[in-house]
Image 1 (spheres, rainbow, N blue to C red):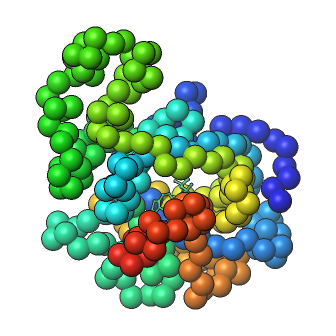
Image 2 (cartoon, protein in one colour; image 1 turned 90 degrees about the vertical axis):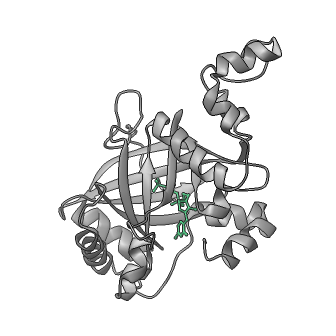
Amino acid sequence: MLSETHHSGAPGESELGCKQQTMSIEVERKFVCNASSLKTLEEIGVCAGQYQFQDRYFDTPEFDLTLSDVWLRQRKGCWELKCPTTTVEGAEETRGESSKAAKLCTCYKEITNLADIHLKLKEFLKDTGQNVKFLMTEGCQTLTDRHGLGNAEMNWAPGECWVSAMNLVCFAEFTTMRRTFTLEEDGVRVDLDEADFGYIVGEIEVLIPEGGDMQAALDKIERTGKKLGVNADQGVDGKMSVYLQRNYPAHYARLRSRYIL
Ligand code: V4E
């Protein structure tokens, strides 16, 4: 159980709680946090805070986004989109890495600017044949005018009618209690998460700018994992994987069969 009582905002967030960077690459490795790794973490890391947040994940009813490994969520009122990183040739950057530890890392582009999120969604949904042309050529105001209804009557938060217009619905909602540690190793952050559906997982994370030094990030994660005694061969599920496994087993199986999870 995560038991500290100190509460604060997540590091790197503005007063409004939204991340200040608009686009970065998140390199991450999940791990099982046992008593020994927790003890080491408390010795070598500085606890930057404990805080609680709610995630709401969105997709089309056919799961077009997640089947493309695209993850749209609202966390503490801020929109975030995670999608796979690609090189110019279209190959996934992490695929070519040879080390075993690198293969256990995930690497996603994290977009927090709403205009950029819209552009990416348009790109992905267009590929799946969703009709997003209407949304992109006409504003939400026009949409509400056409129906003769105001935002409130259509049950849309002001400025967020794009969610419905893109045929997106919330498919997952859960709360996480997170303890964040910063380490001496430059830019390494360790999160210990406890989700309200009864799952605990640790994450070693490094954020790099687009085109940044991926190998350096992987090395930092590997070094930190070794210090914490993390099993070098063990892949560990994230919160969303476990959530889908329990609540959407057929979709989970489909994601597994496509090697997305
Ligand atoms: C499922 C998934 C994504 C959605 C977010 O998942 P997760 O990393 O569990 O969320 P969280 O709360 O830790 O995000 P953070 O606070 O670090 O931003 S994004 C990518 N995936 C796919 C995925 C995968 N294939 N393998 C593993 C181990 N994790 C995630």
